[in-house]
Image 1: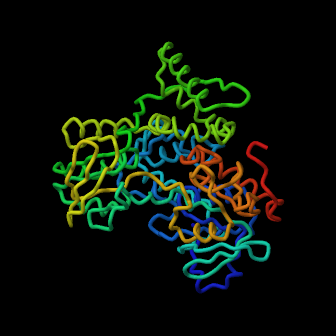
Image 2: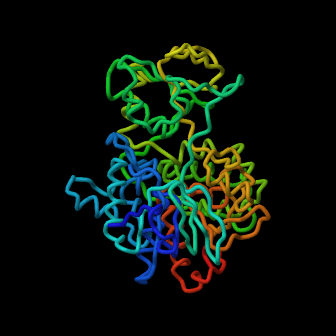
Image 3: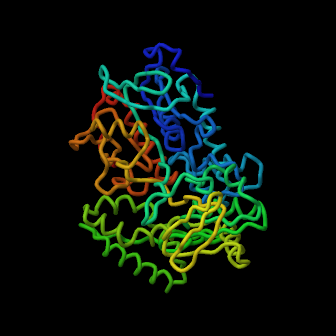
Length: 470
């Protein structure tokens, strides 16, 4: 099992690490696992910083304690290790619960899997520190890491902070007030459970996060009502009960445009349907190609994709498990769940309640929950570490407002666009460069490449990392 440390009472030099990982969720945990698994060096030292002990090795996604929150991917593609694709499915089978590789397992079970792997691979080479990192600065050929309980040093640093809290809800009249009815995030299950049994709750957002919140609210008591509101008023599509073989879409050589790729995908969906194959096979067949397609877009084409196609892509790519979709359909059929397009127009503060004005109606509610998804634009962050690094120019926002500027290999870029040797990122912060970097299959691949680099002899002298695929 990984060790723990209170660095306030330790000599900082005693805790000097080969690699410091900031963030103990899935991204940071997968990075640690791949480092431990890749290297046999007994002197490897990894320090992982995670301020919330309840979410250590779990993060937001897998820290849920509600067993009704399911993975939106089948067990057979959720292995932590790309070279052992059946690893998670086999682990789940050995758990003896009757799960199969094609099942959509509870997300908390995946959290148990990650924690079990840390127990297996951790040992004396991994130290987990319950602290909030406030700053990171170059120091003596490495970095000095300042936290709320002390300082430590590391040769290399990985920013693996995962998804950021959603942007504060606002309407044309300004940000919503701090009020008892305003829940600024969906992951406090106690807050959701404390909503009155006969409450009406408005969820700002209609993606997978809002789906989870709706499940928690509506399953607990039959008197509650939920209204989802988003700009498009669309729900994620649904996985089929059975598994389809991927449809191979040929990607043409040369430069790509967003419109051209969209036309190609629509044509492939039509061709698949003509052959009696569902569109999901086409979308899933693009999973392994999406990052290479993104790399071949120039910045103008990336902006075109984000402005024109990203919503359609997300609702078809990030789908609900069939049993979750069945529950949502039942809620809608009975009128307990309604879906509204057009976004929030105005919100009246009624004290312990609120009145939410939508495009064609107004709803009085006991709670309004922010389910709009993670904040990508780091210039708007309130995270003290990111704020300090941005202000000093150590890191920079990416030009698309999706995360931080980095190379295709995850090396961070400073305010001048130069590589910060020894500092890396992966997962959601790298989206502008990697695009598909939100789900385990993509993050584990990033973690595997980064671990190979960091455990190589050249990495210990802090050389630049080769691009992915080189």
